[in-house]
Picture 1 (cartoon, rainbow, N blue to C red):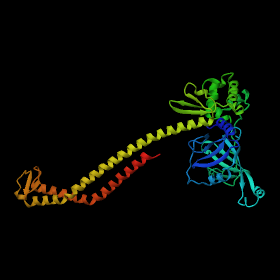
Picture 2: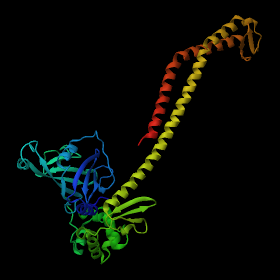
Picture 3: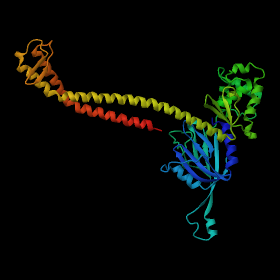
Picture 4: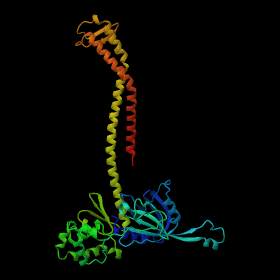
Length: 440
């Protein structure tokens, strides 16, 4: 959960570990994800920022990363120009926002540098400050490169006026922060203000829902934690709370307690696991999950995030494997049906080859029509044996052979096309099955 507390913990961690670090490399991992390889604290780490709609994220990892060498985007080229080789000088978080602004300074040297003496080279070099602004706001997440005049150089996701008239994000436009929400600043909230807020909320709402709706910076996870720390439950209604004389005093103290790390920097990152699956991660202890999930403490919020993401990836791989298994089975069944059609059509092809023999048998019966005794089971002429149906007259037997002949001749004209289509479908399904087994 990349809420205000998680972003604040990240700001503290990045400020502690990356300030004055040198950006060695910029990596475009995929269209929604970039990474900066930073040399700091005498080692290389990667700062990963992703705006993936399913899981926007930001964290530091020591894992070596690689990108798509052929995926060269305008933003990547600008990051190479203004960020690669620069130094990180600041990592502020706007108060109560899910935003980090990474300040980077790089010395740019013009093409004329180096042709004169050292003094002339100094005169044509200049410091170029930029900010890499990382907004982690669900589907509206973005990574935006801004110059020292506050103009957008480019972004991972360009936003046109047609997409957002209120806040387009395009090269050359001034950067505008996301519009603020009309919510109450939770810092310094007292019992009287909390009671006023709760009485203004929708009565059927739960306490946690009301906190999210009315108080700035509070995610559902933070709101549930406040409810639990205050009253030992997360499902309290507003009526339950307002019926207690000490409720607002308790809430005021708990809100201050939950937000305390914003000023103290005393974070307690942890991941919470239930039945082998990660159900939450947070920069503070989630007492609301005690007893229902196993707590795994970590030394940094990045480590906790990386653990949670790895678990999500593993769970996603398991879900993918199950979906793939079902898909492969369905394709295999379809391929078996196609193979059965091929065999059936080939059998028709064999029968079609007997067409002339059926005609000859019918003609033999007609030629010896009056020589065939009633209820005969066979006619033998010149060593050729013609099976007969004893329940039919000789003339009806001849007609039956001619009817089979006509059907065989008709099939002979259709079988090649039917066989080609059936074999094409069978081969396509075999190829599809192989692709499904290999699909990542």
